[in-house]
Image (cartoon, rainbow, N blue to C red; front, side, top):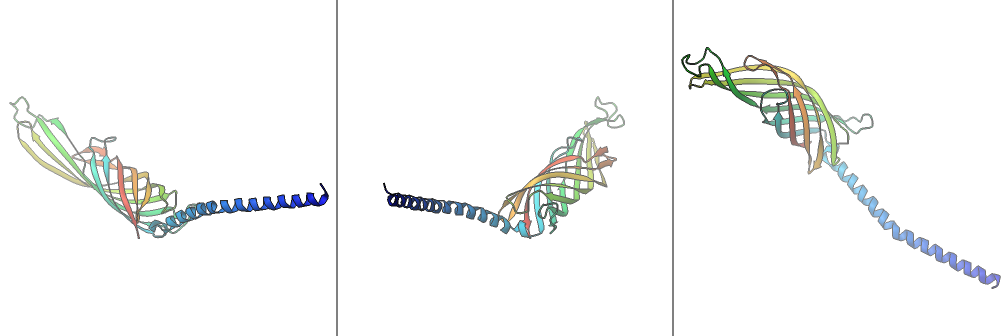
Length: 245
């Protein structure tokens, strides 16, 4: 084979290789472009969520109070409404992580039992001095909270932690009656106590707001004539929906 033939064959092979490479690149390009467009659309959707740009937060919520760890009070529903403000400040590499606000909640756990007092009832009766009692502890709770988000507001999932002081406005009501049917009446007492709350949870971007769930522990003293030396320590499991304005 002469030199010219060899050069001709080499040129044909080089042209074929170049054509194949270009065709392969063209086939791959749409797939890469599609993946980039999908990621871009997801980022744009998150950035367009109201939580990503708005700062005022309003959240109705409902949950359950579990005070059995620290007292004889029973489980009871909790109803609340919070209002907060997301500070327009980035800190430590986190985007707008701080929210401060107020949370107002109401609950009324209770307890019941029996007791004995020799000064009560008919002294000739076998059950003299025995009585039944029922306690209702009404609580209006106001807390000032600071919340730190670990992911930017508006992302599909955003975990957070929170802490703050609490004020408890309370009314205790006790009803007692003797085993012989004697009514000992109703006794009430009101008092205010101050304590602390801390906890954490997560937001899930759904619709124009976020569904959230949280686990909290709140505590304060509870020193009343009716209840004795006790406390309001309780775990709260809560869920709500945040709206952003």
